[in-house]
Length: 172
Image 1 (spheres, rainbow, N blue to C red):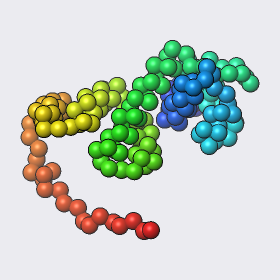
Image 2: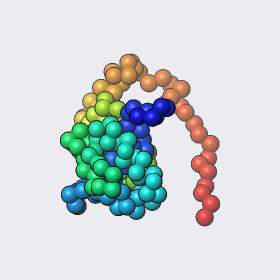
Image 3: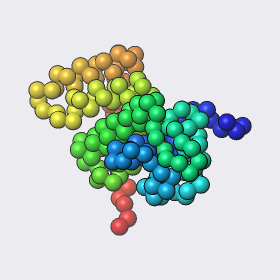
């Protein structure tokens, strides 16, 4: 791997991996041109990303050939996609954010989540996505568990009283 390059999966590479996974849900393999079109990027950008994903063991790829996820790549891509779906659904169905924005937020937020955070999100999602009064106790348990994990005995008064100025109105 050339000097100065990260030897880990970067947020940009995660995006490529997720797109390859999406393509492979519909056809056996991906092509550089298909990925470029789906992501709105240049062919050389895809080629560079694909080379790095192959070096990291997430895909099998030969120059000018088909791109296929390895087992490691499939596992990682499924994890990324599941996290993005949970986040998208949370932003859209719970927060009321329009779907295109919810999808964009989910893609960006997912890059900052490690395994522990993804597990907490999964637990919270399962409680909140179809919330009704019967799940109030589960939500209370989740919040108490979260505070134990963060070593918070009680929420400080200043946190409860955070005030904000008027929300800025968007220009139309």
